[in-house]
Length: 404
Ligand SMILES: [Zn+2]
Ligand SMILES: [Zn+2]
Image (cartoon, rainbow, N blue to C red; front, top):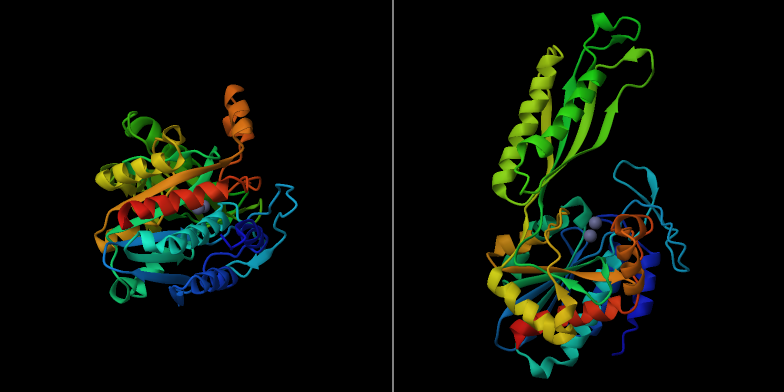
């Protein structure tokens, strides 16, 4: 091994970039792939990187990592903590942090490719490295596919990917079937009639309408979805009005919805629409509310046969006890667009980044949720070691399962 992966990780961590702005990260990844002898294209789907290693006859394996960071102010207190800032799409300067660990994904990818290049006389096939932008927008995979990568590069027989998560370092979580939820992001605009705060009877108050809507939306998961199932309805943003004595004309809600399958998705979306329209009617609204879909992500569904093979390969590489079924995660990913568009199986797994002793203590104290920061937290801080090494081993072992 010649690439200093720890130095690479720290460098990426200190230089996080927002979605679709990952030019520095992409340049560094591309240079490593070029140095390792891959054919490389940059700027694919804005800032994405593709690397191809043709190594004789055999299957085509796509390995995917994402590289964008989040508008979060890092509070880990680490010596290498990010102090970076960026400009978001609204033009606002924001702190930026790799709060989802995508810096770890790029680092493990470069390490895994180096390992596969070193072992190239032991396998045969084609490795396609996909480093995508803007996973956090749910838009980067689509941008790369829209750039025509399925037409211009060998089509995958299998798509593989991994995500660092608050499991103990050394542990891999993978399951057959639904690994991550499907999700929709909606914006709901409720129309009232504005007026003076002293004369509510002459207005239709969208603030009250919004409050009633938010409360009623909570009954979807508690009263309508089968308790055996899983669904999430979160209203993450609510905006109305500018001043205490003005009743505004409209209110906007932003919803994040999650579900394990298409059936639940359709049911929840229908319930949202019914409740939003009914609450507007109940308020006497003179104009129908608008419901806009801002993004849609499919469920991340792991192929049964391919997952069995990857699980066995990971057990051989890391030990049987290191591979667990973590259950379905209610987070969502855009990785599966690559597999869906290509008609190829997908295997996507999680790997732990938390000090196992700290994790065990938190679990014993019943304080996992409190003491172990999750992805997107300003305190999210994967241990550098052995997280990098496990990520490299897992990705390269899974790829070798198909490449021989
Ligand atoms: Zn994330
Ligand atoms: Zn992520």
